[in-house]
Length: 276
Image (cartoon, rainbow, N blue to C red; front, side):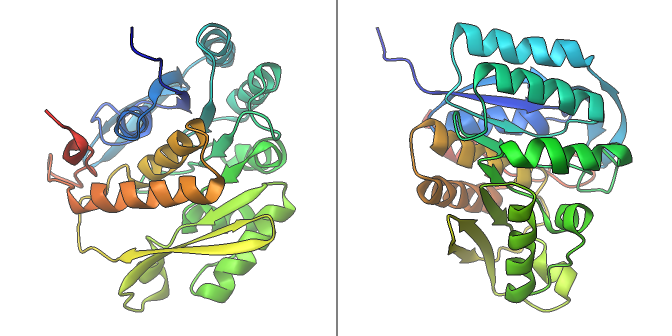
């Protein structure tokens, strides 16, 4: 009998187009060597052009999924994605506290999804305070994009100095570690960036992860996939620095091999990792 792999849990919404959300999470988990389990928070109506609707899962059902997975197969690391509402966040936090996810025990990666890449809202406005006060203090790592940083701490990241300012502000909300992702920096700053630089702030140290900036239009699910690959590394027992390095390698290859699908933005790819 084969040895069981580590288990990573995605607490996230669906993507009917298969590019982002828990679908991207489970693909990244598998490509990075862990078993993927899920707690579905919302069902979206989504394709390559955007999100045309979503239906939240009842909070007690979200919490029950977390408890059931943790109670049977165990969880070695978990991540969040789309949480949709304050009530779902409260249910997730309660269940995670019960089973030992977060707060320095089982690694907990918080990807504070607020909108799709097309700008469709995926988090209620009144839920931002719940992200700040409930999720971030429990986070092993928080992985916001630049728009989410602006929403959470009112810092516009345009350069290295503002990236460090954002990390400090997110630490102040309770996150143990912060990954400021540089994927959108060129668009926000208006300046050509030859490299994509992600800044990890953890335990008082700063670590930079660099890769060539790839000119690819098909990046749907990129943020989800990076956070999931990092979660997989943590589930495998890696340090935060090594897990982020794994995530950076994974997402660089996933963007490099991204493909067109549908009439809009195609997904980043895990197919390059397939051996068959």
